Image (cartoon, rainbow, N blue to C red; front, side):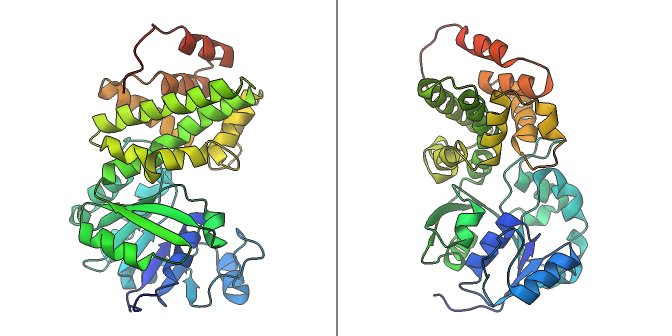
Length: 335
């Protein structure tokens, strides 16, 4: 256990992944504070040490909680941002005027801004350019419920400032939680954002019962499209052979991954519109549109992502999508 620090760590907001990472920080800090939007949820946590997202699991006693998000941000030296990607810009902009000078940000968001197709760090820096060297991203094969249960987990922390990344690595090292660091923030962010639609595509194949061959092919070619697009956007190809690339994708392409399960339902005949209207967070719906638009802008061929986009939004049938993909011109495998 490292020496405890007085720096307050704000978890904004106290959703599943924010809570999970907060429990790891609590191993090395007594200044972790969950930021709740709901008074009832906050009160229940303080009274029972249990959050409704993790029934039956008592969380560390040294974690506090509040619904006064403005005071929490104003006092925090490190802000862990854990909102949905589509709400980040409007959510974060209200806190910029009250952030402490020099406060750092770690985000755990896997997605794009649905309006601008920007990565999460780009959104944050656009809102406050002074943050350019004070942002890190954490991503990898990390199910929140397993982290809270202290099951062995490995992750990646990336930042343009390696001293900041190393500091976070120390703060987040626990007997069951092993963080690696990277300087490829672009690649780590894109790995987390692009794996969601690919996991949906794999789910569709398995929901249709097309076989193990087709499933393996979809995952492999999906990873290939992720790499091609990410490299065009400035990422390091090697990032995608590690935990933030293939590692995260392989975890997401099986239950209980939300995007995989959504794809599986579509493969069994559920209409995409019903899933969109369900209120359940399925990041792949937004991410696939951003990915295809970025690919078009950078002239990258992404037939799987395009087919998925057309299934979700343009009425392409599953049989038509399969025929489209299998009838493409023959080519070298080539990476």
